Image (tube, rainbow, N blue to C red; front, side, top):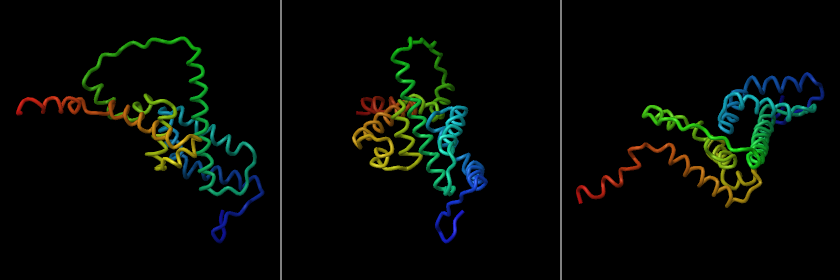
Length: 188
């Protein structure tokens, strides 16, 4: 609700509910996609969005526009995701390791794995994934990511470098890995 380009603070509960309803109706899919890129699972993404909405609007908030409300919810999605990552990493330090059976690598399975970027994002650490998503999905600069995650620019560059290196290896075409060795000695 804006008049003359300025957001007008509305003190009634009905106006607050209207902002939440409009945000979910107009930007709900975009928020869910954002959360999906963070966590890689559609159900967990829906939970992240729900939790972020509750955190943002848990107490009566007035004066939000759709744009400002979306930025608050996006920030809540990011912090909720990072907090969950910290909790799970602490748990992994004390939990028993669980062995996963190795699956046979079929050609179709390799192609599906290379195409499924979401699955590949899940191979990254929590901070690597957050940095990659913020850089390439939110189109933030390194300094902005550093500010958002409360890290140094060097740490963000390192997380981006490590994450992209892992993605490059897992998303590379198997034929490309051996191209340089095949070209080397045959026609020389």
